[in-house]
Amino acid sequence: MDLDMDDYMDPFARFVRAEPSFAQELSTIVGIPGATVTATANADATDKGKAVANGHTSGSSAVAVTEGPPQDGEEKFAWPWCGILAAGAGFNAENFADRVAMFSPEDIVPLVFDDTEKSECFAIVRFSPGWGGFSDALALENQFSVNKLGKKEWEARSSCGGAVDGEENENGEVKVYGWVAREVDYTAGGLVGRYLRKHTDIKTIDEITKSQREPLGKIVAALATQLEAKNQDLQDLETKKNATEFSIARLEEDNRRLHEAYNEEMRKLHRKARDNALRIFQDNENLKLEIENNKREMVLRAKQLEKLSVENANDRKKLAELSDEKQKAKDDKSELELASIEQQRNDQDILKLVEDQKREKEDALARMLELEKELHEKRELELEVTRLNGTLQVMKHLEGDDDGDIHDKMEKLSEKLEHERKRLEELSGELVRKERESNDELQEARKELIMGLEDILSGRTAIGIKRMGELDERPFQNACKRKYGNDDHETRAAELVSSWQEEIKKPAWHPYKFVKAEDGSDKEVVNDEDPRLKQLWIEYGDDVCNAVKTALSEVNEYNPSGRYVVSELWNFRKNRKATMKEVLRFIFQQMEVPGKRRRG
Image (tube, rainbow, N blue to C red; front, side):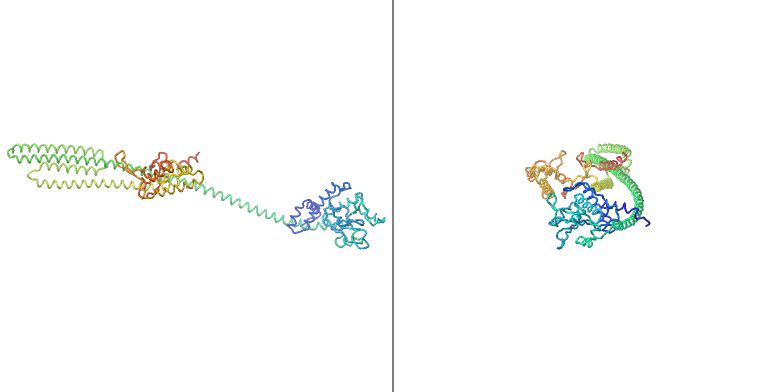
């Protein structure tokens, strides 16, 4: 990397000293612990230098301390930075710490004296190796110098042959002198010189600065390498991001298309379901119309048969009367001529009767042909019956000497008439069977609707599913709340509902009785005098008792054999069983509501 280290090292060093947290992060990244120590120490030195410059100690004025390395690059100092404390005899070396605590030393090392040096007391003040420690050391030296307790005063005291005992200041304390350890102290003899030579090096400011630049250069190189790698990673991530955004856009487009296809398919299914429901509804309506027409046809046929039976009875009565008259004529031989005349008259009456009946039958046939064109087979049967009855009547009127042949013909005609009646009854039975099959199909369709619409019509709607024979829980909850209070009334109500639902299912309990309906028929209703119902009414009141009676009535009407709950399509608005027409109309309305909302 073609970089001039001097161009960026000084600003970078100042930045590291100003931001200790950044130095710690660099130490973590590149694994150079000295960077953290140096930066932290330099930051501390800055803070301490400012504190000393702006503060004061006892008996001294403010002393300004310059932050950072000194400008004199030739002067040599003991490094790591050290301060020297000196005191006269009688001073306890352990008290040195109290005098320099404000300068944040790392350690204070008292020196043990031998017999030749027992009159004086020294201590080495160790500071951090960074520029912050250097600032603290200079602050210590300046502080003692301002108070006239620097190295110059100490040397002047020694050259003047000071007293053995320590000097005292105005507060009665032994004076302590202090200064920064330099080359002269490093090369001096005695305990101080020996300690400095053993534990420190003698360096200029430029040498110290250069030694601290090397780890910073490594840090910068490592950071540059990592920055280049991070830039490459960033480009890779940008490429991946673009690819991901493109994939997301494609997925969103595919999702939109799938959503549109799904909506279109759902619309088709809704239209198909609506068309199928309309077709089923129309088929049911047509089937109901056909059943109604068949019913009317059966009623009309029954009336016509009844009319024919009455006519046959009248004809038989007339024939019986004629037979009596003929027998009387035979018995009254004396009135043979009169009988002959009467016979002729009777024959004429019979012929006239036959003609009248024939004319009436033709008129009836014309009316039937006009009113019942689609029931051709029925009309032919009725005409055949009418013709046979007429022939039978004529033969009975013409009964005479050839009575045997006439009776045979009458029997054959009667058999044929009976055969035609059976055919008519079979046709009626076939119509009844078709009606029953249609009704069964309607019931099956109703069951299928109940199963398919149980989820759709489960809410509070006008048309819904009602469980016939199921107890309403609200009266039980209200009664239990009144009787037991709010404590556990819901549990008691649930247990009471469950027990009475089981009672309703038991076939051995039959709380019903028969009463006369308005039309005179017998009708089965709930017996209010049943002992269990009366006891329930006494304990829980009318609402609970009426709920049980309602469930009993429903189960007796809709499932008397099984006595279990069954589902039924119900018109809640009119409180009755819902017709197929009402259910289908309600379904169509529900299917149209989402469409109207979307258009709105």
